[in-house]
Image (cartoon, rainbow, N blue to C red):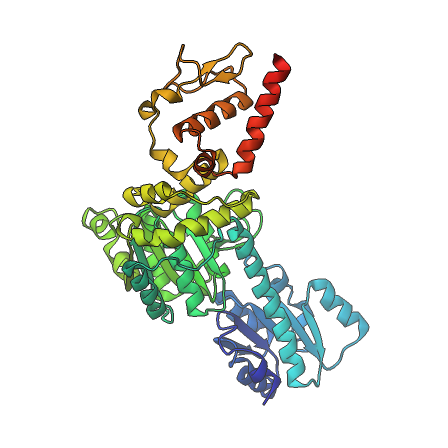
Length: 480
């Protein structure tokens, strides 16, 4: 078995195209046969003029070029190194090499230089280095762009709806067909899209795009790329996100926000599996699976003329509906500890033990903001040292014993009943220390002096409360 077949997946480079330029028909045949196992498109030419005609109509990611050709030599074909589109990688080969020729080739920007006669594995290794470098560049760009958004792809929950969702993901993942994910905002549609990508085992990256967050006039360039000088400000060639996602998955979030003219362009890409960068006359083949998501009723958008019907049916080959959290509250049993542990690790604090009334409050709430709202509530409670149930406790409902006044030393005194501040918050001139003391004393009073219960409510250890009370006692003795 050759080096080629045992070291590389057949699908690994399918999104790339190659041009072999050599005047020897036998060499063309050998390289075309070997490279066709890797690449979906391998063309051959016998001279520079013929190669230039092919290159003007088709984009090539790699050119394997013989230096000694009839007419113009490979070194004289400078157009491939100053291409306004993305420059291809060039591997020179020759049977008559000298130091000056090699230096000229490297100065032009050649990726490699191979002497004839060569072992086929030597050529394939050179090809692999070039293509892996290009793949790595795309992957790095995708990861850098996605770093802040990246999240775990494990879907948590054991409710019937969530179990069905997991089964659908496994069922849909192997296909290349487009997927449309519908669901309310905050239900985790991007998480579903990531899970589909990972279960599909596609080699390329997962590239998310928020169609509503990009200015309409920039969306075409963002998705399809552009050539140098294509428009004002286009100082260099840019590879679009469709090309970055080659071999992987492009996630179009908020697809309902996509401008009408871009909907037509997207439909053409889905049907032809090729894109045309802004300012370019060449179409570039792509191997991308498109997963789209929306919090709108896309069918209704079609009925009202705000979304193209043909694009809707092209995206809606496979459809997933993500249930709102209010319909699967059983999932809270896993979601609450997951977000608590995750956020505490980020905040470098000890995870609290939520009280029974906290969990009860979560289950009786309808969660209009879904899982995103749940995460935000847990984070806010951790940052403020409050219980989860505190979110639903209105200040006006606090008992009279929770009222706070100022003592002669400028410290809050919950024992005093004059000048109550019930339901009005704390005075603007109070220090953070004064607010902290007033709030802790209110919670302790609410629990009738039970510091253990108050500590659970506040999300801190009982020792922390004991230390606070000792500090305040020391301060009062010092003032007196």
